[in-house]
Length: 424
Image (tube, rainbow, N blue to C red; front, top):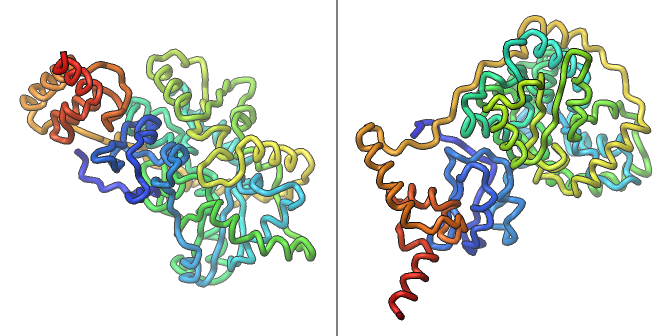
């Protein structure tokens, strides 16, 4: 087991948990167990995909993000907004009003992920062309996918795109620019992300591999949405002129990034939904998809608009953003300073390392003995993978039994069989 202690933006409210095992069945890394009718999450396996949050009908598994009042710990406060935020509002609320409302919460400046997405396309193409020996290159923008690869597909870590994500690039740029302009020290500038999913919250507080510790906190889109509703009503009567970047909103939508990167010498593929992502990663491991140069992977349905911290249906949000892109006019952005930082290697990140999630025993002989016992228990179990025992599969239950975390009596199918045999 790794000595690293992983923090997560998900918490379990035990009093609400009924032990229904719905969360166990949807966890892509088998991180959840139910014992004594209460769910627990293995922090080493959890990738913060949010599947368990979405499926829990009893609100026993809930997301967490920072409280808004932490912004007052800094002299100059900046919000960087995920593109998916703008799809959460009804069409009578304009893009500019939704953005200005965030500033009214106490920020000195509001920046958008959308400001640098076009610049990112150029970086991605450069990277793909400079790394012809790696095929396919896998996008690293979704932190849940990055952690999924660390946990389940470590052989693919060299294939990851090793440059910062758009909001981190923007953070790096803004810190330098604001520090010089406002004559402030780095620790006097607070930069916060407004994000659509728990994986991005976790990435801010525990950056790993492809993520440097750049931001000072993260707020959920849902929380910000609730706080700006009253502000928006006032702003609609007195709108303020504010720069917007509708052409850059494409980053929130599934498929568009791949379309933009795709060119005469680059073939790109887009995949969303964690089950689909795992299927594609398995195919990449087996070299079935070497014909692709770049694969965009998002764990949420429809991309970032499907994140569990959003409030709107992802399909409706996607439609609204497409309308903004079609009807809006973007402000021109001077990327000269970004180009300089890029050429200096400021956006490059260190290669990731695998996340060791479990070892049966540090002693190899004992580990082999335990593997034999797992196989023995596996032959006794029904092979239905029903999760009624509180483990995700029969193999997982056999493993839990050998590690002393469960009992063969936890299998309700075997118990029922034995009780019938006893009656006969």
